[in-house]
Length: 487
Image (cartoon, rainbow, N blue to C red; front, side, top):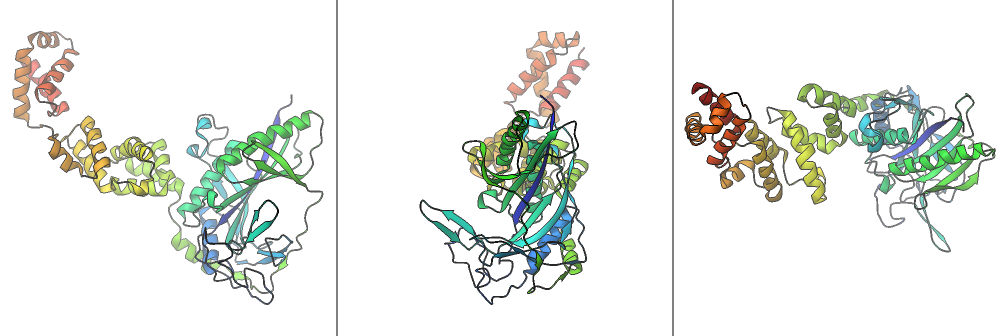
């Protein structure tokens, strides 16, 4: 069988986080009763005139700045003409030849990929180029019943970004990583909550395959009905081999649109595209062109630290590993928690360890998000300080952490209640060391004879004698000093 190359491009629709719709003052509200957030404008009634949502324009410019797009001096809105029941005007207000954002790229990173391929990424640190980002209005939502169809116009007119990638994606895993990073950027910028379960981020996939020994692209096939990032990966893992098998069998692929059936794990034919659809775009006569300079200025003031910038800062400023920085920066709430806790600790790396090992495990077991953690960042910082100062050891630190998470008490209160504070008084530990050496002459002689392991036994006896309260490091140092002095 020949080697084949897959060529993939994604069209991602992102609902913007605005209070009102794109061209009217109706509320944007998920889960509202059907057809309650509607008006003559979003219902497309004759004579109703659209008015632009300035916040939607600003958020689009912000998305463009975060993804390195060029923002032309002027953009405009056009009418995209087609008829579907969910678009009552018979056209959609969109952008055609003068969109708000051009070019740009989405940088992929290791943790954005599925876990099972993170150690075998074909092209590390790849950037997926963008064609454009344009702003449009969303359509209504159809509900298909047994013998009828209902349409809810609450979603009609919601501000919608369409982010179009270049055909730069080469595998299902890269598509997964691209969507993961894109979703993260939208959340970082407050541009969208990007919740796929709520339809706030939706994706259409264009795929073609061709033999590796030819530069001519294969037939483009579109796959719709993708409602999760993992679903996109599964659809591609089915569709790419399906197309290759068809070509190997001598079949000719045709341009078509297919539906992804997640339950059955396969794509099925929706419709055949015999020719490109002519949407007969023309400038919307009710909407003036927009000068973008003021939008860019407003967006610049709101531009946050980007996820990849945050990861680099964590490595440089907090001394954490690349992996730890990636995990901490992956969730904006987790990143905020880490920074607040680390601000109070002399060793931010210890805070990262507590969060990534103990806290995330506890949150997972409790089935809650970091934003609901009963353990506040300041409390974790206090615990780390107690361990770093030697007042309790790391093993006791884990015990105290578990108690803090379950009770909400502070570390200092728990340490006092349980009598856990370590003895770091040199004279007290010297007295204990003398007792241990006197009670164990054999191991003491072994150490003096060069058997270094004997020190661990003696140290264990000292810790036992102190009921675990002696500072282990100090105990070892004092024992060694006493033994050498007596040799």
